[in-house]
Length: 290
Image (cartoon, rainbow, N blue to C red; front, side, top):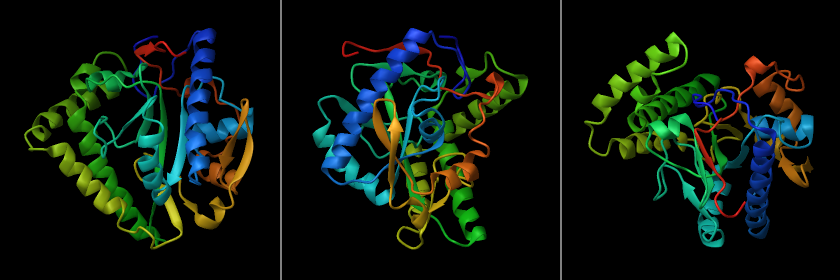
């Protein structure tokens, strides 16, 4: 693997990507079994949802699985999963014993490594993972929703900047990216002076993120940069539908085409190489299980 920045595109050897996809499908099936056992709702979003519709499986160059849950489903899942899946998985996130550099909860396979450039810069070595996007209630009023999105974005970025040594990311990338990494590195030096700063930023984030809980039928993933365009209404979500995905099925929101066009535009069009994204890890280790 090349030394790519998080979120950039990197080519895998075909046999490695195939092995990665098979490992992630096994993880997905473990995830789904717990959700089915406890009647917990979930659905694919973003690149995974595009893969379901356009490829009936992974986007050929994609290297992870993106799952979404409404807040109430996530909180139920995380309680039962810690019990049911503890032999094979651990959970990372700001509200977990094991923290991550960002606010995105993840189900991580023990004994493996999937270390992106950014995780490396944060001094962390997570394993193969499934991202869990929490869909929070947001106001129907666009101006009020924008306030929530802006406030959560600020505290999310402060949390990330405090946890990642951006000076380690200065090498490589465009001049613009180098300057941003230097600026973030300088800001981090001041943020580190705040006692328990990461916990404080997360508490501020979650206070705004949950401020409309149960008060509207509109949701979005506030921890994602695309929060403004990822929104969906409850009557667009339910009833969920099952569509083919690799050798299994994936749950999708009922009006997935409408939501994907809102979020991704012409998502059925294959993007050129220069516009493709994946995680491209700095370190990849399948461990003994795969």
